[in-house]
Length: 321
Image (cartoon, one colour):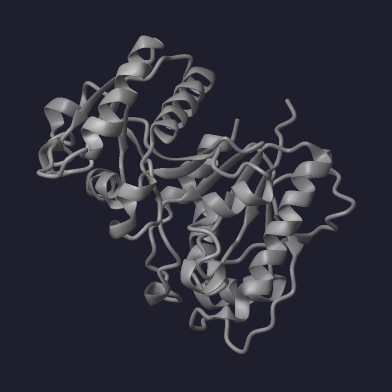
């Protein structure tokens, strides 16, 4: 059986990603050929500093013979990046390198009709500079899927999805809408049906503490409850709104496959408390499956060789089919 390759954009060069990549390929055998898009010089230097030893197969992005690839060596598409030390502080210096890496990946995906992409973390402050909220939105814009994608943080036991992503709390209430709730439920239901042949049970949280507010036209009454009623009429398996401070109690969790929350930390904080790094970030709605490990650059751990590769291993296993 021929397995389609998994493209991997290494992302921020001054992050722990290459370390966890080395650990991931050392610990597991993947059937799908892995192709990493990164600086060859940086990869070689970090490998040496961290004590890993892999041969590198440098390939031409314009002439890739996918049927000849395996994982006996690291399959690398080299993107040049100038640096003084292989462990530096994050800065805008790496922006062109990251942009070029994504451009190469998207070009290869489009030309070869590939469907599997993993990207390492980036610094939103340095790379995105407020132009988009995160890589979820960055890739949506690049593929002309603006406002049509959904972030799903997935574990086999539970997944969560925030209606708004990397927004300041003061702006969250302005961005909650019925169409966004509909889109999340629709794409998540389609994902579970296609991937697991099941109709997921979805809980939706409120925005305000205890799902109530002293203000007129609170979001629960004006937006969330009407959206849930309409989704139920359309036979989606949804319920709520639930107070976010109790929905993650174990007795409730066993009743649901997915919890949709109103903002990022409302659902990601308890998710990480429950599963640590044993979860992956999947973007639904793109022309391909995009996954990223559920952690940031974590530059404070750079070069220490102490980072947990579990999230990247789960991402690779998820796509290795």
